[in-house]
Length: 269
Image (cartoon, rainbow, N blue to C red; front, side, top):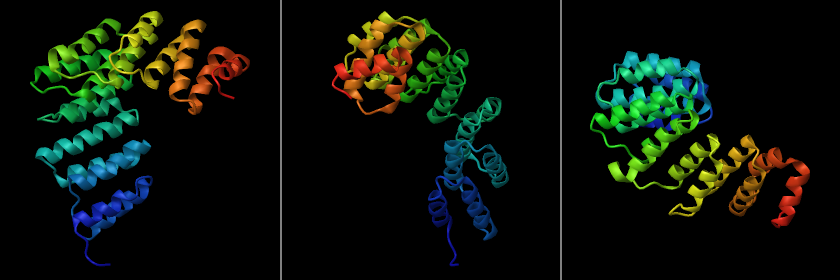
């Protein structure tokens, strides 16, 4: 085999996006040739592990990163990637330890840790990190607010969610997009504030997306609001008529017979 440099090895490894085992074997083969993995190489394999939620390869890569002695920006990049791997594999405490050890946290690192807490149902911790990030002088971006609002949604923090949403444009100059609006609808719907969620959708400055109507429909299922659920369902099917997940959700609310009748009225069969 001709000698490959680190760029060539990284390109080959990146091709194995669904095979963390083979990607690791290539990483070992790379090391055996004397070529040292850099931050880009390791982050590629870590990305594979996080997408497929493979903890054991992630731990091995953690060891490789420690042995390679990465520092500076490379340390931040790899640490952030490790936070994502451990979070997706359910090891939130490990994620927290790694995050805490990052000396100069960038926006991506903060966003990753805020979302980690949000997805695990730790909304208060997510908001505390959000405030700490702002206090550090870093400017939150669109992704930051999706992460913070998701934390409010999963932890039923309605008033906190309103404040975060209102602060986007007023305090940080970030214009709320469709994802942020959908998060707000989800916050209200999960809390049972279905009519307020519907009113929020109607007053949106941009066209409501399937995410917004889907969040309202899910809330209607939980709180058994059939009439508002019908409204949300009709709007949802206008936007995504071929999404099978919508049919499942609709059937869970109205039952298969009513679901079929509703679809016929909306022109679906």
